[in-house]
Image 1: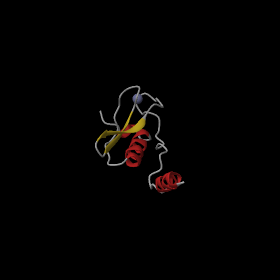
Image 2: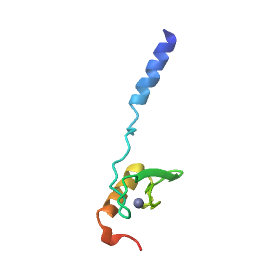
Image 3: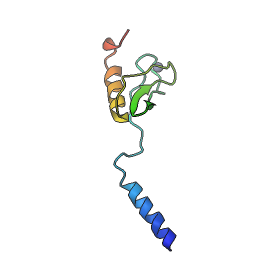
Image 4: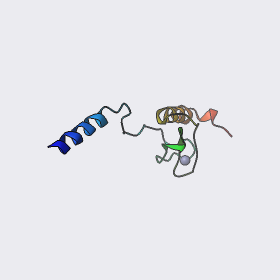
Length: 83
Ligand SMILES: [Zn+2]
């Protein structure tokens, strides 16, 4: 009874977590059109979208969502891709 109450409280606290666990939606890789691109934490507190096929690494950012957003604006404008 006591343990169940504690577990219930922990679960309730977890549900209040402000960052949902669902992955950010990212555009296909602008280099190879692969859909394996996803935002990863490349260093502590530093995120970038990484392509699992051609190993391209998108702009660094301080959050997963921002790294995905920067990648997406990059992927939609191939004319501004770095050389
Ligand atoms: Zn790629």
